[in-house]
Each structure stands twice: as structure tokens, then as C-alpha cells.
Image (cartoon, rainbow, N blue to C red; front, side, top):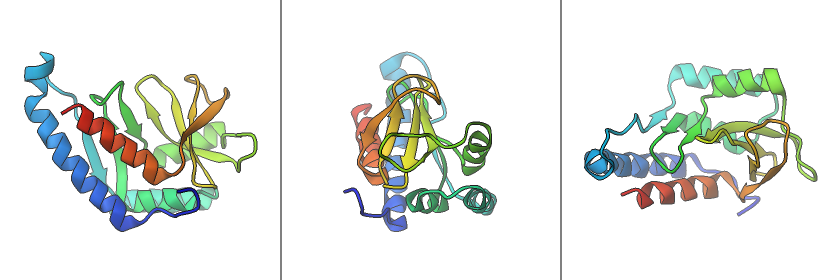
Length: 165
């Protein structure tokens, strides 16, 4: 799937499926786990988040798939899926970029951190469209390939949500 670009309609469909699965998860969560769920949400883009995306694009060249994603999604917060999964809002990505810069991965264009997990591992998207995951909770250590594309990353995330049901 490397080389194929993310489609906004596909992202909208993913959001709808995630919303339905998360609604089901919340209904049974406390009975299964003995405590209430956190706020598991896929927040849709707003005019304000579109402005943050535009500012991010002006700040640094970002992979087109990330622009497409941010045109549909503001952020994703899934604290109760696995150890937690979080897609950061564009404004946070810009702030992190100003502080840390792009991630350097051997043989790859510089990558932009856009997400993290509950263990502090970072996820970065490179210009090739591949998603990379830090091996430690650090901006400066090694990154390994996590998914061949942003779409594959979201498909895996959907699978992890469904495993919690």
C-alpha cells in the first residue's frame, strides 16, 4: 500500500465505524473491567483545527496523507484501547515540531510525529507514507516500521478497537 494516498472519504468512513465500535465498547466496559471507561473519542475536524492544519503546513512540509487526515479528524483519544492510542491535534504536532524538529530515519525522508501510545512511544509519518514507531519513549532513539501507510495504521487501530468488544 506504500505509494497510495489516503482518501478523505475513507477516513470519514473509518470515523463512523470507530464511533459505532466505541459506543458499543462504552456500554459494556464497566461490567467487563470493573471501572468506568475513560473518554474514548474520535474528534472531527473543525474550522479551528483546519486553521491549525494550515499553520502546520506553512511551518513544515508535511506528508499529504497527514493533511488529508487532519482535514477530517482533529484528534483521536483512545485511553482504553490496549495501552492507549492518541492521534495528536495539528496544533500539538506543530508545537512538538518547533521543539524537537522532524524525526530522522535512515533511508527515509524526515518524518513528522503525529501520534503516541499510552507507553509514550511516538508515531511518525514519513513522506513515503510509511508510519514509524519509536522503540522507546524518546524523540531521539530508533524508530521501527509500524505500518506501510497511514490507512494501514488506522485499519490496525480499528482492529484493536474491535478486539476490546
